[in-house]
Image 1 (cartoon, rainbow, N blue to C red):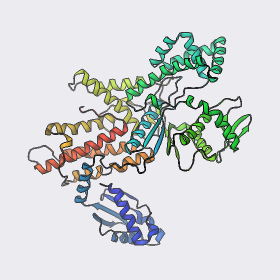
Image 2 (cartoon, rainbow, N blue to C red):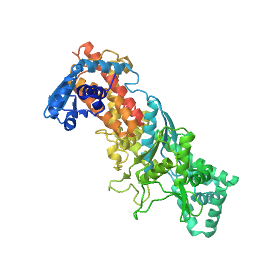
Image 3 (cartoon, one colour):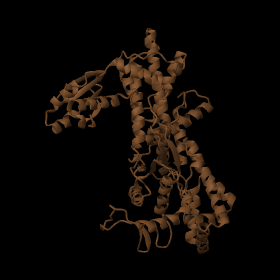
Image 4 (tube, helix red, strand yellow):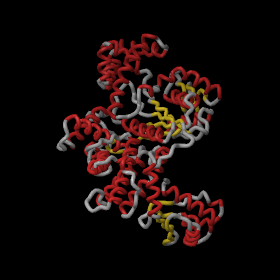
Length: 575
């Protein structure tokens, strides 16, 4: 089976080559869905100027080269090509898709090794709503690339090193290891940090001890490293609980925090300086990648080593780029990080390419994450101005989902299971359905709604299809009859389903999960129309029609479940 738009693109490009010469074979046919036909190609409008001929004349010549096309081509208006595919061709392709266990999603050839840097909470504080987007977007991209056959290396770049750890370790000693571990495991990292910070500001002795502890930590003192590990282990157990609640695929083995690169930082600076790419400026070691200037029009520095000899984010990120290219052997590196870091990553990539650490054969991309807003349109915070705890929001989402299904007659165990799936699906889908670089308003009431483009609506769509098979007394896997397309609603649904593989490819290529959300919502909407207009199990429906429609139901279910799985949205059997 083949995506119709891909088929049309190839056919029209061949027609362009036949009509006007091979130099036109790579022209974009500008094929889009149309209300007047299945698709419309607008290439003649732009090509007319290039050929110095009227667009309608160009369109007629293109149409003349499409005589063996599986459908009809009509020229309308000033030069639009209206393309309608044959019902028999659509039915054959849909049948082939139903028989394909991958539902039309091809493997990437050749497969790539893709490093995805995502989530990356700060170990000195707890996870807040700002970490949600990076976590669920990165996880969806990881799932999508793996489905396409790529090898995915997940990297959770925890903020697990730096000067704050001096006071955090001293605070651990003051309150005792057991009390510290209990507080951190309970997700009270922010309270822990604030207590340590307050003591640092008010107690001179504590400040001196904290600064001394930074030195012993950085020098590798065994006891200090043991205390650091106690702190980190407790914090990571809390992170793992949040990841488990969200249902993301990050594990302990995926941790690649800042501390991982400590041993590489001195060499990173030395190699950059030896290559001539880094120079001393105002006492600091800096790289000046070309094309970056400040407000004073002077070259903008990427500070690799501070004037006091300390390292910063740029040092770690340069070391990470080289590690991911040289050691991990990445073909592609995705940084799923806040949009406010855009300039930093542009400079990191430019500096790494300048010094030869990021060759042209490796793609490094910043998947920019927009801000999460409250209903007031400002950064989402509590009334006291603090970041909202992610765990609190997830718990509330489950509570709201539980209330929404309260009167559906489920026993308590089933209700809890469904409420958790609906709550997590609601939060994740709401985030993923918005372009990742856009800001969006975090509104739980809207998220858990069963109407509109929401996670619960999508979950309900799959549950409704499963209910059809329960009524039919058969399983979706049993629906293997040939598909026929006798009604417009059947045809529209089949045409939509055939685009699934192309959409999954787009998500991976562009790192844009919202495209898959839009596709799945449109699929569910077209299925709803099909269900209303094309009876499946009603008396009087001919057996062959019933079986064909059950096969179409089964394919729709598989596409929806596969797509939601790529988004990381759980799919309960019943709603």
